[in-house]
Length: 354
Image (cartoon, rainbow, N blue to C red; front, side, top):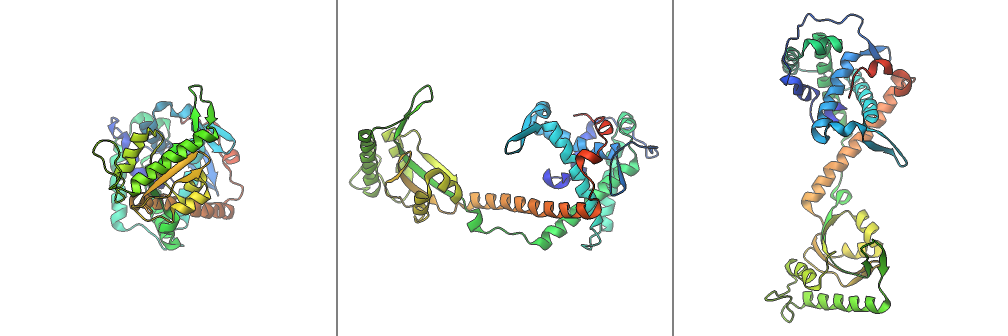
């Protein structure tokens, strides 16, 4: 939905038009406005679609530039489409979703309060006054239409919130876990300037393994061992594992923040299981992967900030999946014959340009 997907309200984003010279008149009421599509008998005119389309257009161009519409975007595993085509379809789906949510208001005992209605009215007045005569005439607008769209979005937001609250969608720390660690990596391959990869010989691999063992001994014996001038290794923090990377010229050593699935995919399940046996602030033994030898410093088994961020992302995805299931069910109930390809009048829709 526009108001949800864009992390803002339709009303707020519509105010991007505020820089236009205003001369809108409330009395302007379009006669026989062109219809872009019908949903369960309800006509959605070009003016209504225009309000949604320009919200998205301004948002995308602000973030990605005006050339975004010719870009190819992935729509499935082996299929792509132009950004404009994908967005046009999304806009129609978003409008249908708003209509569906509004129709469910009574089911969820949701209505706008007097205060909320007054706020929407004030915002509608302010917005409509800033529209130009050209916009109003070309897109067959009216004050009543703008008011209806804004009120529908305000009500749809409340219904959406009520549905999500009732669904009680949660994600545990375990599900969202992000782990931050340092990988002191002694690679067992070389990469030519051409990009060709050559695996080390057994002798070269043995040499790298011995260097890794030497580095490990430096880490666990901070008193006896030093790295670089005046730098003493300690097992209490990660300072010297980074110093060791510099000392040994390990250009591919660095910190990573990954989920358990990602760690398993990159390093293999055996290393992943071993990593999750470490405590914060501890080092692993020298471990071998198909790429070479590793010593891991566990900074945070559960990186709090990264885990919280991942949790919110997972909740958003779960909410979207939950709502999409409801939308599909509701469309089948309300208008089972509706589809973007067959129900939209593209001759009218394409008068709205991107």
